[in-house]
Image (cartoon, rainbow, N blue to C red; front, side, top):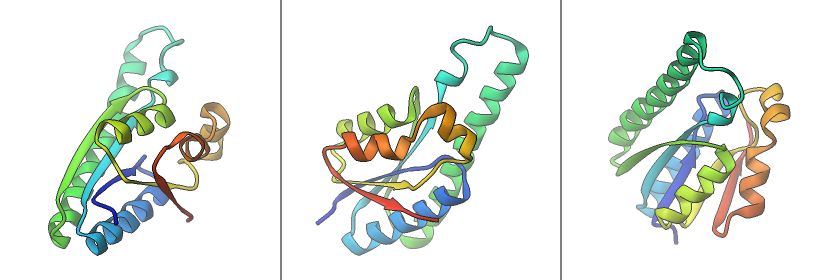
Length: 142
């Protein structure tokens, strides 16, 4: 039923569980797995460029690369084909854009972000994806 699965990861505890759920689905359906990490550039647009902001941006980007490393290891263990995607922008918009570009037939996403404050500041990425996605979306709860 599913051949091309996209899982959104943000480095949180729920995103690890989300990735594991997506791995299970990929294995069941013999599907390709795609992991997307979105560097939320909206966090930096209104802040003057400074060395501290660049440091934070690098930390977030490294967090994405760490998620990709974990996903690569797990997919290798399970014999699943993996592609990784690093995007920049609003997470909800970028997840849907990636799903469209790669012809995903399933999006797997966590029920909430890293922290409640991010949900307040950024809006609910999960709600945005569920409301605007044209493909099936599986929401994983912690």
